[in-house]
Length: 225
Image (cartoon, rainbow, N blue to C red):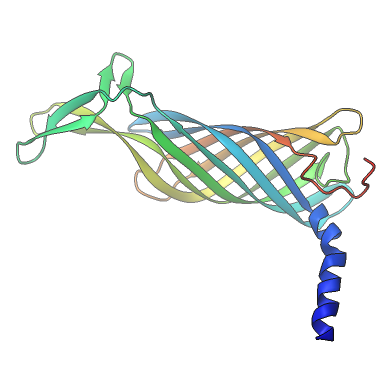
């Protein structure tokens, strides 16, 4: 019983130090799913990012993070078209063809990467209040997003199917952080990312994110800051 009490006290005593290593951010992201055969589709999303610094020095940190994004793409018009399948049957599907390309139905998008970053200077840790900081890193990502797949039917006609697909692959990212205000208790983070899918149709997924690092969720070493 004494060992359990002592362990609980040690965990509570170490909680401030442990919490200082967490950094949270909230903002918006844009993703482009691109394949050479079927073109590009742009999705817009809300993003929440959390990272934990596994190693810290005065000027840099090594962090593990999960920036989660949820959104979608497409318009609200469910136009129908049709094509002949291999047996000669007419198959209807939700899409439309315009002069500038396919009109697609609304589709959801989810992006969940696991990233290891090297963070330099400003906001590499919560104690580093330099005006500007940078980061670079990579990892593995899961992406569920929209694709347009162009087919040809048995009569030579073409059609575009608007659908979604799962993708998993390596990802790289880089960006910068800019402190806000005199005390630099908050910051803006701008990030670019690239993911190469290893799954079917192998889309290239480009991302751009703009996040605000949330000072109220971030534990500070000095409560008066």
